[in-house]
Amino acid sequence: MAIANPIAPPAVSEETLQRPWRFDVFARWPWLKRLVRMRTFQFLAILPNLLLFYLFLIAGLFGTPVGNRNIIIVFVWILWWFVLITVMVPLGSRVWCTMCPLPFFGDWVQRRAVVLVHPGKSPGTENRFFGLHRRWPKQLSNIWLQNLGFLFLATFSALLVTRPIFSAVVFGVLFALATGLALVYRLRTFCNYVCPISGFLSLYAMTSTVELRSVDKNECLKCSSKACIRGSEKGWACPWNVYMGKLDRNNYCGLCFECVKSCPNDNISLFVRPFSTSDVILRGYDEVWKACIMLVLALTYSVMLLGPWGRFKDWANVSEVRNWGGFGLFAAGQALLALVIFPGLYYLSIRLAKWYAKADSIPTKELFLKYAYALVPMGLLAWIAFSVPLLMVNGSYIVSVISDPLGWGMNLFGTAEFPWAPLWPEWVPFIQVPILLAGFYYGFRGMHKVGRQLFSDPAQLYRSLLPPAVLLLAVTLVFLKLFVG
Amino acid sequence: MTWKEAAGVLAVLVTLAGLPLLLWHWRVGVLNRYPPGTKVITLTAIANGGIWTQEEIVGANYWWRKPVRTEEISLQQGDHVVLRLRSVDVLHTFGIPLLRLGPVDVPAGHTVEVGFTAERAGVLTFLCWQVCSPDHPGLRGRFLVKAGKAVETW
Image 1 (tube, chains in turn green, purple):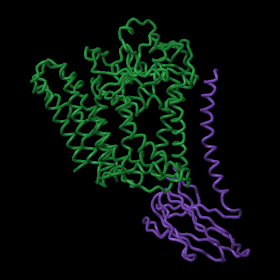
Image 2: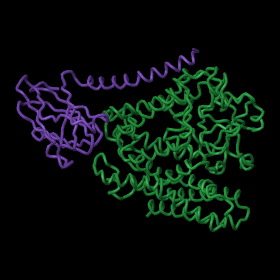
Image 3: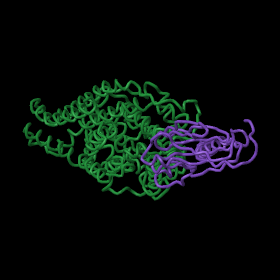
């Protein structure tokens, strides 16, 4: 079973096989299937973003250092972030990975092609790859690196999202890493195990309304070529090292659609499904910690970037204020909260759940992992609630920066002097509150769904849900207090 | 290599080479759009340190380079001057009191153009009129206008 997480292979449960309703997109719109089967599809999806990110790098290095007048800050941290977390992930799973330019050069050097596919032999595949093609170390075959990487970047987020040079350096390093790792390791090692963006995409894609799956798993069982994962003359081996016959979660499918091209049985399709209903199992501590880290960061970002407490902003703004003591407090506090305190609180709630429900037969680890799904929709919706004011208050900068992307005094479309104009800021709390409440609802519902598989007695089930539900409620109330007072 | 592959590679190479060329072309074009003989001077205000500088301040050098302060700029009597004023941090306000030029707001990240003619020889002090930082008093400089050719109308 070739998935990124080395925890025991997933049991493909009855529930997974008999999913809630889902709608076969390729069956309904065959032109879409023809589109993703084109060899040029992914290249055409990536090229515009490659151009944009190239412009961003140039702007970060040679454009104005003023963040709201530089396209790298405005487009990446206002527009792209908002669209990613609010639209792409909930509605498109990892569709950003379909068009992400970061691994482009790595793929190019590995494949020695930007469009073509090379049949041949490389270890584990039916394609000819170049480079050393080494296996990533097993101890690192999880998302811990991504967890810590994202937490590290988040520590410097006040600089990252406001200073063009910092963003340019980070993206430049990610480009270089992706390319360098592709020369040494197999497939998309960077995307699977290193990319900090990939880390949270993998988690929140679980809630998404789309999934790429095999149509009939029995066909996969009968298939001898396993071209979806091994590749063929029609498509590259899955860059994510995913076998469609066993795929039952969105986490590690990057929607590159190579498997749709290479499947000899035409047995792979894109499905639409309800939000946050299907992939409800977290499989390892790395994923649980990811959920904890992201939820805590949604809180600390909200405090730091949206809150009224100037002291915290000054602590985070170390490059200008130079208060290293304060920055140290902020960094340590955030790390402690994300890695120790909140996971500790969650663990405590699980121990209480076990005690209250008298669930001695269920291992603590199992309950800890399974109920942790509640943090996923909750975290995603907390991030969406945080991102709404980003766009509504700062979105007008997009209009001005389109005409003067580098802050050089251009006026390409006549909008360079478009003034800062917050869009209905008085409505922001009214949008954030239902989003946060929805996060609580979907979190509780996901926990309830998983709990039904563990407890046949409804009374025992609800007793087991109570302590973690109280924790979820407390988190929701903290966010509500922060956003609406 | 098929034509699709070749086209793909070409598209990437055109992107990598073309974008910097386009930007460079724009920059050269900016300097060429003024009437011949116009003296174009770019002045960037930096609040931290109270500096007006003619150096290009961009993302790559803002944080660790100490730019050279512009104390004086030499002009010839009769020069037609276009000042491209920039701010890389906060709102500044530019003015040349002797010419009654300004106050001209220079918001952060914006480029503002003002023009004047150095009609008489002498010293023209320019300064920031907006209290922008503790180093605000340092935000001043001089145009040294040397006696020379007669004034020509624009």
